[in-house]
Length: 445
Image (cartoon, rainbow, N blue to C red; front, side):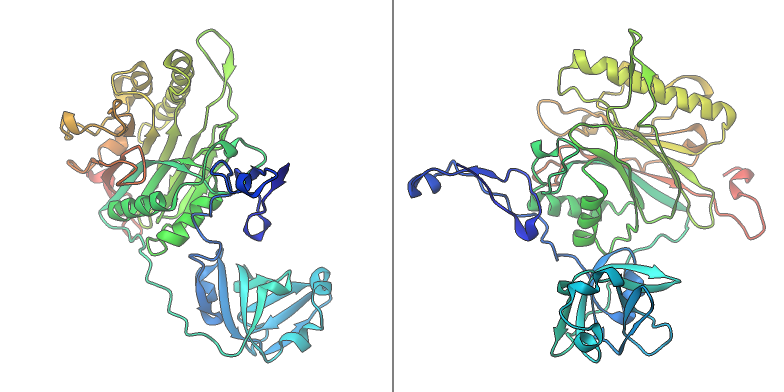
């Protein structure tokens, strides 16, 4: 008999089918597989705050506490008002179509009551609010709990330098089955690896980080909210790409972001003439440090050798040729363009892949790792393949701003850092812009 075991809150998780025998001894057999517990509990990392602080956690799921001063209505919405201002500074919003879910009039249920509201904090005309679709989102309390102030969060204040990094985080997957990709073949990242990953990112303390092997934006945000809420990675960018397993490239940043481009749909030629696409993507993100000129982070994760090098290398070299084409087109028109190309290239420095991407002449991408001893040039950390395949490469204009000696490889393993790749960091000077003046870099930084 085939039985489906429902996970908590009826979420479809991976590996939840179990075969039950006809006897208790078979049922308790070691061969029976039950769903793994979620590595991040559903409520974990959710802010628990008073309604006065709700404006500080916009775009996050939270528990908000306070007293419903009044319940008012318009033609299509009903408002649980947490203060007497008109309009209130924070409200719970029940759309008219959901009122039937409640067992009594909203005024009778909640007016004058101390409550906890759980939901996603959005804004309307600059005021925070939570949409309430179900009575389970609102809990009546006997007394308001003691809430802690939100912890101070690191920010990026434009200084002389900015630290960037690239890190393949090894299968940052959730436990939910996405029916549109083959994610069921990969388990959710274990709790202990999430904790090690967070410790590594905390120690790195980079301002902008390109990431590889992230399943989706949701698990990335949950990871940051749960383990790194004080690190200031407010800006999270990920576009669903082409990988059949569901892994994507992503970027997290303390610095505001501008224009984002994906190349997932671009078709380019293999050596024999047929067309292909990126196995994942080339993600281009504009970084906007306050008071300084922008630059771009391009994040890649090229085809791996998992299915054999003979099969993978033609695809990877085609990806490399396309990246070089895009760089040539850009740098020929804008030789001053500030571009960092980073990620998991799945090939070593002297390979055709890297030679193609780096290019030659005045528009060649610059390598920055020369200060690293040769025996320390390891970014894939699993024996016997101890190699350097993760890089931060700089366009000529960006290379001029490289802080000598700042290129660093964070050595470790899944047992120590949470990944089979070592993170790579580098630091760059960012030219300040004087009030009413031009980019100070024009004076010969």
